[in-house]
Length: 407
Image 1 (cartoon, rainbow, N blue to C red):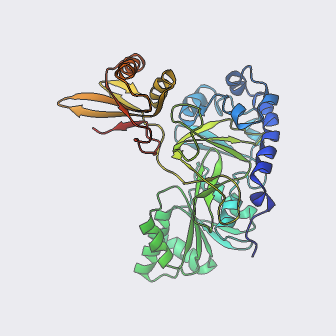
Image 2: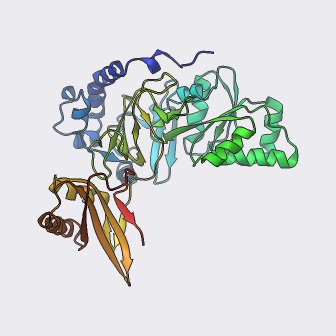
Image 3: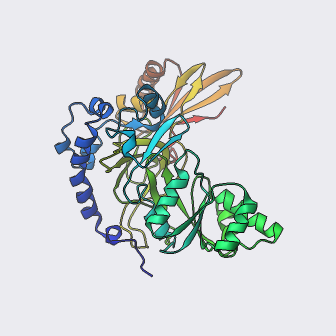
């Protein structure tokens, strides 16, 4: 049994970077034929965007912006030039955000993740992600069929009928949330149904804590995790190394300081930003609102692409203080105005019956003058007063949290 999906997964990282960034100018030119990208990227020379440093100068498109943009210019917010009828399927996600599925093979890039989880051609897969309006079911369905698997389009729920399907078709694989897999296993144990044919699983869409991993492993099922979104499909996936998640091919991932488009230092927790190289539906620096950190080195499984720790929380930490919203972008602006500062964290608490803010800031050059200057900037940026604490470099945890609401 081959260990890797293809040779792309084990090429030198420098070769991968060179190939991706040689394609990026063409994708940018295609994207800029769409009115929304034409406006956002006005003045950008696509031919000059051939490095990560150049890419980092382009504006970030936040996923949280998409519902309003899609509503203003239905169905795709002006980010797609192709007519809706040119796509294979058309979906919606809460927001609403409208997502088209391309007509190419494996349009959601999931076959690699299934392969890494041990799925192979002619395996039968029970797919329990929803097939109703949202793309989840079709992401895993089309990925499994691209790998050569046969798919049972079960969707979630109706466990009794699913037991009948499992006993009849004897699927070796499962795709769905880890929670629903547990429901099936518990239900089978209670009712005496046979689900022992399932030996491997690719799970996503919910937390998969070590306790649940151990429980599913005890049933003889080797389960792996995938990280994806309805916009991009599968972004990263676990491998047999069980050492973080490997970023999918054909994607450029950046990890940026929440509220900005600025890449973090290697190993720091930040927000995931993805650029996809699909000329029919490109995403240019789409900020997902999810936190992660890059892992150093190469995966022991032999795949050479960037690795991440997996999902580590949400980057959108906007909170309301004394009736006014305070956003990560504002904390980032304070940092920009004071280059001597490192990590920042705005802590919101209650004293008596009033909201209070304290900005904790790392710096190697602490002084009362600097503290007073920062306090003035905090008031100017947020329109709210607050205390400032200056800390030694490294004093704040590396968890990507910019605003901590401790009320």
